[in-house]
Image (cartoon, rainbow, N blue to C red):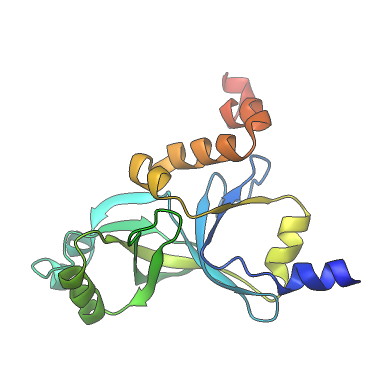
Length: 188
């Protein structure tokens, strides 16, 4: 029982969830999720990092077109609340093995952050991803996800499906055949 208690007291906040190739839920297939909040008792919340929508917040919302946040890229954040946007930013102050996360920022707060830091990575997410209490723990036990620390180099160098593929193979190179296989094997 001690092992289970230790496992449940861990938090995955600030970590990346990387969907395994066998996860076929269209909401999370080939996704990389940054968890902003997690506890066994409260559940978890995060945003999908690798689904760029090819627009900026100024294009999506004309009222922001000429503001400081107008050029922030928009991403699909998850299946919950897709009609609402969420601003998030992160930076690696001096140690590239730790980062600061600013999640759910208001327009004013994000403008202040942009003025304060020149090394800020900022994104707008349409919707978010959420898990009820203990749901994420069950999915991890069912081998639906890999867990990885947040990585400066990967997020700077890769976007979209490449981020998922490179991170999955870095964590578990034995998954190469599954990662490289087409979604529909009959179209190979």
